[in-house]
Image (tube, rainbow, N blue to C red; front, side, top):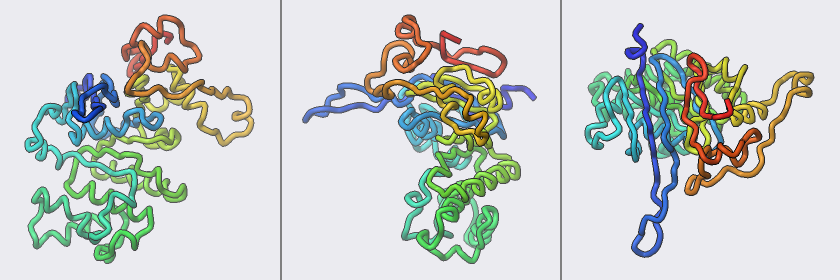
Length: 326
């Protein structure tokens, strides 16, 4: 297959700056550089994991790709169509092909709506089925996420956290999307439920041919579900490669530090391996440091790191790193 035809989502030089306003006249005095010049592709049928600390720009990236935010600069291509500069009314046809699973199954469902009407709402918005087929389609979506269709009349507070997230997944699948952004979909669930939701998502991906952008903190979960992984730090992607290579041979100092914090269930290996403790705090995205954003905390930084913004470059096939020391 032609690699170009295999790409579903292509992001180039994406920037998303939020203005900082001050004074009675609300003058723009600075920008929060939430996403600052990132590029990546997602191939059809794969899962790209997006990891990094809180506030690094992962969720903002996902919302820009969905065009919930209009990016400050850059290009977003979905199924070969450019979305970045489309006016809002012209984005709607693409919204049926893209969907979002929210992080919080408690806050993302309307407490006054029944579960059935929540799941069926996209069917009405996009005029997918007529009224005679509506209830059958809602029941089918409930069965798809392993819920009993007899529960469609219940309201969200009558469900457990795991069941609510299944409702959120059913809603995301209602319009039969090709691409789903999963914004930390298991981070607020009990550990015992997390594996069930991850397994369900993998089954649905295989069954429906879905493509995922999986945003998460938990590196062990990302390793389990992702084909490739992109690591973000302060609005930049610092490393991107396939999952196995990233975990077996991380190259960027920040990636190494992240992975050193993941516990290994082997006391002998855990005792011998090096734990990398980063100095200082994450800089502010309003006033990021010059050069490489990571250099104030980097254990291998040299003088040049504070002067040069490292480009994301290919070190070997399908392994890109933004670091002049690699």
